[in-house]
Length: 51
Image 1 (tube, rainbow, N blue to C red):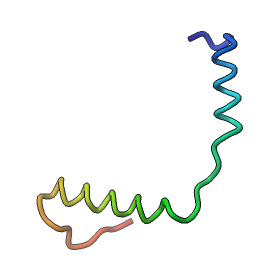
Image 2 (image 1 turned 30 degrees about the horizontal axis):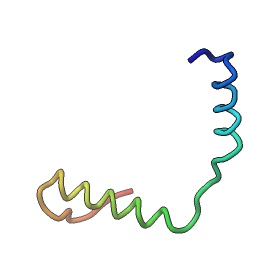
Image 3 (image 1 turned 135 degrees about the vertical axis):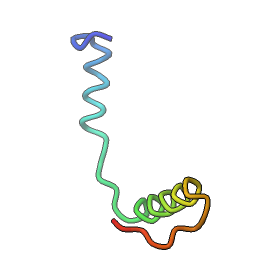
């Protein structure tokens, strides 16, 4: 897709207008996902996690 095409410019406008910072419910989900991934990679429960 060419950067000067109408479609590209339309997508760019949407992407600069629509995203908003997520506050609240996404952080616990991210932490749970990271913990689950760590367990899968280690093959055991991690002793601790450093941020």
